[in-house]
Image (cartoon, rainbow, N blue to C red; front, side):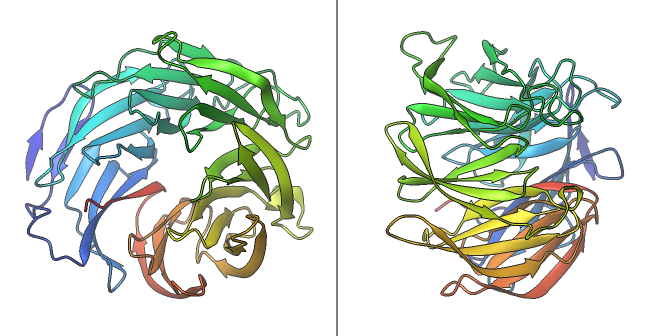
Length: 390
């Protein structure tokens, strides 16, 4: 093994297989993880997209502190990582890291790392023009609480220091979890003209115009109206736009619901709200990740707590409404994130608390999940992203 020293992070190559040498059925999988235990950071793994199996021996282990969320650039040549650090951890400073992905070998190489000026950054996304990284500083503690941070990216792919921050007034409905802002995700509209910050602490989705031409250092301007109000104590988490751009789907962590919105000209109008928990007590439910199939026909939502299941919905092609068609156990505990394989034949689940990645079969025609193909031990996995270049 050969170690490559870096200022803050360290990359460890554990294999020399190039992307070109891999067979057409093999793709590479990136796994982010929490590093308070035995996990070391980001794992680059080989995935057989026909058999649905991950090769246990990693191609690379990229050492990093709590790389909990991974964001790939459109050309998949760069990877942006949030390091979910905060009070009580080895590194108390929330950070974001830029990595280059070698176009031949897919090796991850550190470009640079900057502070997000907040604690526990838990999600990030790129502006449609790839000029900015939007970071959701969750901020577990009420002081300083959460915030939205804007980080410019230069032509070399380096993250620049934060140029704009926004925080929001908390709803204070839940005295344990909503005494301050807790921004959980930030995503752009399909046309790139608006940015939406889902704030669990405020029970609102905050809406911003994206206008870098007016002010490159402050590209986000509050829209009118400036937010979408959610039910008190619901705790909005992740927002996903439909394939056709006409609808959006939101998970609310605390109330364990999924909301359907109609989308037009920056406006989100609620169409449907579905309860994922079916009367389960609040402490036993926690809606999490939301993803759709590539054909836009099915929506998948994780429900954590005591439920620990993936819910499958059929999407009405006319109005975007959801019809539940399946509930499937995740075969573990706390499914923080999941991902559909590029060919749609498998669904991979990062079960954070039971320390494993579980691979399930998926019927591409019905959308339903089938048998468990593999359970791969991994300490505290948090995010899954495929490198899938044409």
